Image (tube, rainbow, N blue to C red; front, side, top):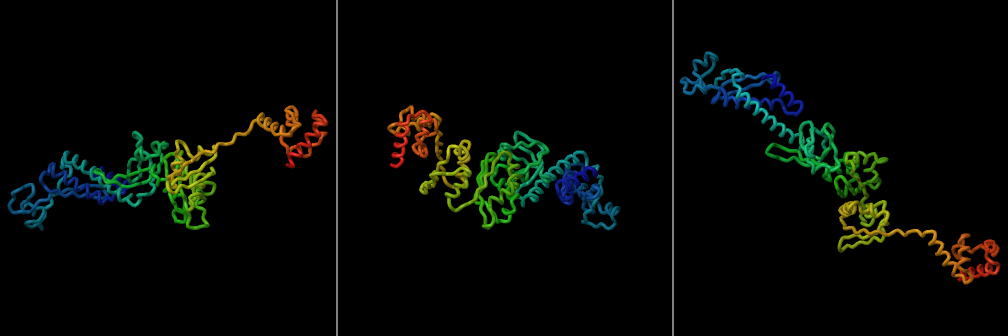
Length: 415
């Protein structure tokens, strides 16, 4: 059994980080307990395991007496002195036994107790290893997937990321590395359990803090953060040093810092917004590049009303209103967004008709003459400036009509 024990001790010490001394103590107690129910039923047994070789030795503990009433717990002093001349009445005599004589049942029981104690040690060790990492990112390897739940190996522990705590767009397979937020360690009947999440808002906050030194130092800090997992996160940042641009610090040169965060989030987008005490300025920052127009504040109902161009409306509101709801939560105000319809440009015929109507203001201009004037680029009264009678005569307008039209145009312009 020594090779088996030694392999268990080495595995638990190297892979699970459990102290060999504690393991030996628990295994010794387990074997002693098994022996009491097996071949040495009713006897006290002491077990000793060599931590280097894994070899096992066992002794039956007997009380030295001058009259034996219970052979399973007592030994006569004469017999005891044959093995140890120094023994005296009342002493505990240790009688060596062959561990193999513990019997098959005892060995099976010991194996079960050993496994129970190993699991308990593992769980207790989990709490010791991870209690200081609550609220931080931990990285592990995906071992398997069952009904959307991921079993993840963190080296010293293995636990499950529930489907409802993952990002809907996550697609991890066995052997892939995965980052999770350690929310808490929950005590259960089976021992401590790691509570993991990738959908919690603090997951993004921790990812960003890992990339942005200014956040860790406190120069830049997060005023508020809201998240719709897998869709979008909005973060409002501020700075304690006016020389430091909080948005630039979070984004990094050419997006170097935020890229790593986005890579971990998959399809999720992240908007970083500069904080302002002025709510109107904050609104403008929050919906950029759209520009709010006709912005009004309803302090009584804590509502902000504004309009945006038709082309910006969809991006400001988002799919099924998600973007607008996130912005509202970030600002702490209700939002009412309306669109400003874009003015459609006039077609060629509409422009031609409108120009002819303007030229028809001149008494001498008929529809035919108006059509001719529009054809040569005269579409308004101002366009007659610099035009001579000869110019009009060259396009087929009579001399008298040309002279009259120019005079009438000048008179209207003077008015």
